Length: 155
Picture 1 (cartoon, rainbow, N blue to C red):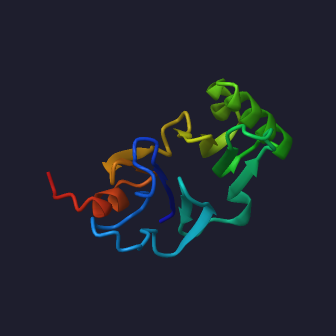
Picture 2: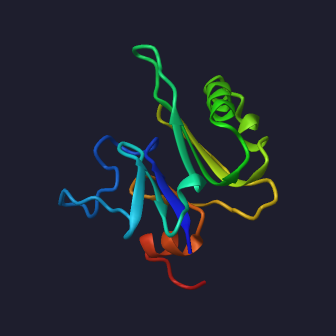
């Protein structure tokens, strides 16, 4: 099984990202066997047996004071690196539709400043799940890890 998991702290207070417990124990939650694609304050991980060509992460230089802009594409995506860069620039301007226009079956995660957008493939083969957690939102392409994270019981 392979999946991606991330965290959006846009609704969280500063310093609560991935914190465990209320005592400020200083531990950070992260998936076992994961590969960090980008770090705090809103980390993204790939978990499982991904081929190197199935994980592509790009960022664009931003003017001083401008928000961070980065894109991760996981899965089989037929876009070139230049097409990904152009898609990220379009997303930075608000045009998210470009993230689902490339051929293939993939999940796209774009971060513009503190805003994160996750786009599953149009066929629905790569669904995206989310749940409130630690004053923010955890998201993943597998439901079970999120259920484990929040210690959900069977409905």
